[in-house]
Image (cartoon, rainbow, N blue to C red; front, side, top):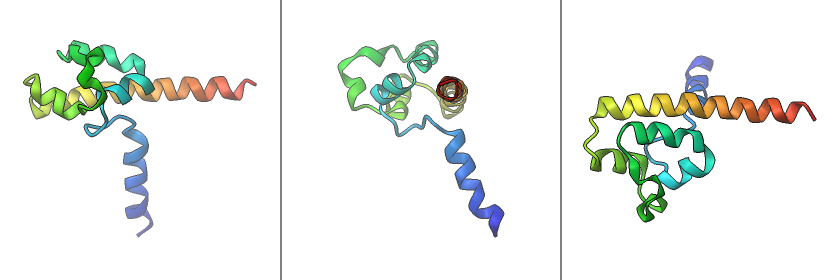
Length: 94
């Protein structure tokens, strides 16, 4: 049973960026991930809809398949984890 409860925590830690986050949240919290969205055709990150449109909604509106959305999220999360690691490393040097 212990392993069943630890799995969701691992998934949560691995997924800093989800389909449900707004484009604005992603750009604000993980600006380096914005380049990945642009590479996948989501050039609307600076648009007024970015404040309320989710990553998933934007991706579907731009014709991304479920597979492409998954690939984009995987890459965005790799970058977000690197950014979090850099923040942690910077904080430990104080």
